[in-house]
Image 1 (cartoon, rainbow, N blue to C red):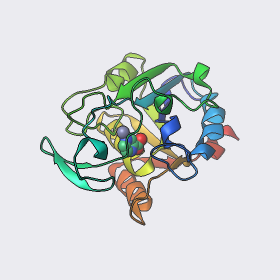
Image 2: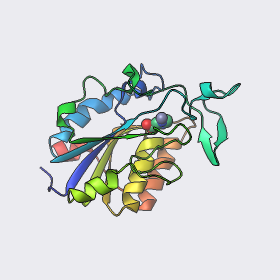
Image 3: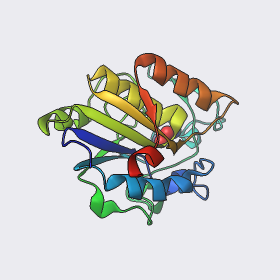
Length: 209
Ligand code: VGL
Ligand code: ZN
């Protein structure tokens, strides 16, 4: 068991990011048993949930003649366009059935504003609005967070970077992360960026042994 001041953050372990989902992440299903095992070691487990309205601006389908992978300007921010995914109250936005949801202390939803995307579990991509996760973790006395989930090169990365920015000791559980890797090397670059920002790298094998 870790100290009560250490929390686990599960990033976007949702149906649409699994290999059979709308925004499939290779091998994302392999993260689930690792997450279930890791959860046992923490008093506090928070989960983020990508939670978009159907008219969300990150969906290629909401922009005529645009397709997934293209980048547009969305109200002043560069926005990668995605397939429709994690629409509120649909099957795809649910946590994966095999995930031990009873072990989750609190859920933070993000990406609810159709005008701006939110990769991080702490803030939207413009750092305009907080989800409340940072404040809540501080209220619980948390000083260190361990992060796992999907996607390494998007939501995991921005969640870990914001965690550092919020002053938490931040550890990436790398074996329990999988990435989109739209361009070869994206995952590697993301891990390098996190490391340079002060994120430590560990694994669930190390903590569940
Ligand atoms: C994510 C792209 C769009 C993620 C969410 O969970 O990393 N990526 N929405
Ligand atoms: Zn999304």
